[in-house]
Image (cartoon, rainbow, N blue to C red; front, side, top):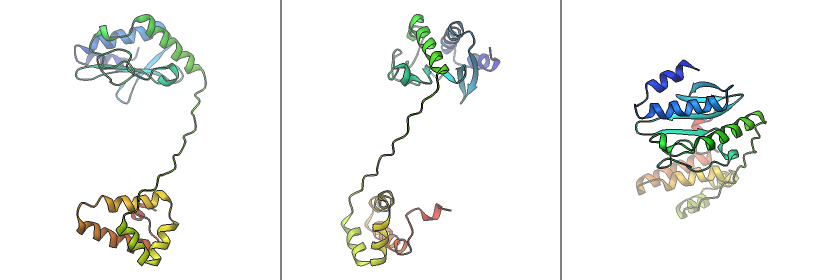
Length: 197
C-alpha cells in the first residue's frame, strides 16, 4: 500500500477516515493486484489504467469509477446528494453501497480495464448563426469591404463579432464596438486577431 494514501487518509477529517479506510480495504480485498497513487490530489486505484478513486471533503466523501458510463453508473446510487463520483455525498459508512454490489462493480471495472479503451469520435456540432442585429446589418451594407469580409467568415467567426456587439451594456459602448468592428473587418481581421500567431 502506498504511504501517500496513508497520509491522505490520516490528514482527512475524522468522519472521513473510516469511510476512506473501508473503501480502500474493499478495493484491495476484491482486486489483490490493484495499485494506488495520488493523482489530482486524491487517491486513485489502478491496474493498467485508472479504475476508481476516492476523495475526502470538509463534510463528505466521494467515490467513483473512471469508466462509469460503461459500467452503467450515471447518477448517485447512494449518499445524500449528488457529489463527486457516482455514489453521492458519502457522509458515513452507512452511505456506502453494499459490499457485494461494490465488489461486483470493482470486478467489472477490472474486466473493462483489461479491454481496450474505445474512445468514440467527438462529433463537432455545427455552430448556429446568431441573429444579426439590425444596426450591424445596416452598417455592413454601407461598408462594402467590411461586409464582403464578414460574409466570407465562418459562422463561428461571425458569431464572435455579433456576440461582442450584443454584450455591450450601453449605446456608447455598442457604437464604439461597431466602429472597431467595421475597421477590423475592412482590414480582414477576425474578432480575436490579436491573439493569433
